[in-house]
Image 1 (cartoon, one colour):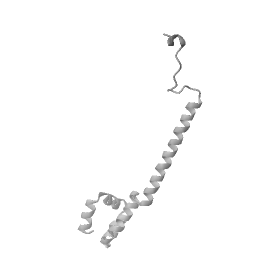
Image 2 (cartoon, helix red, strand yellow; image 1 turned 180 degrees about the vertical axis):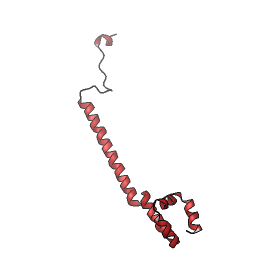
Image 3 (cartoon, one colour; image 1 turned 90 degrees about the vertical axis):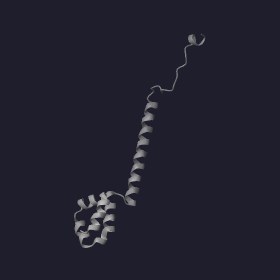
Image 4 (cartoon, one colour; image 1 turned 45 degrees about the horizontal axis):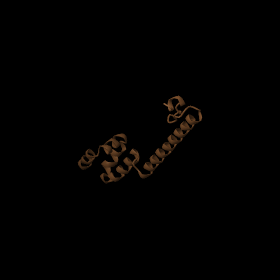
Length: 100
C-alpha cells in the first residue's frame, strides 16, 4: 500500500479499524489507491453514519420514547384508579383542632 494512504489511515483511526475488519480493502487500495472515497462510503455504512441509518435510529428512539410515555400514563392511571390516596390529597382537620 502506498505511503500516502498509510499516512491518511493513521489520521483516521475509524478507517484503519474498518480496514482491519474488512481486509479485502488492503488489496483494493494497493491496486487502486484512488478508491479511498469508496472506502469512506463503506465505512459510513459499517459505522451506521449514513443518512438513512441515522433517520432509522432517530425513528426508533422516538418510538421508544412513545412507549415509555404510554407506560408512564398507564402506571399513573393504575395508581389513581386503585383507590390509594394521591400524595397531594390532604384530609380536613378535625373540628376540635379547627376551633382552637
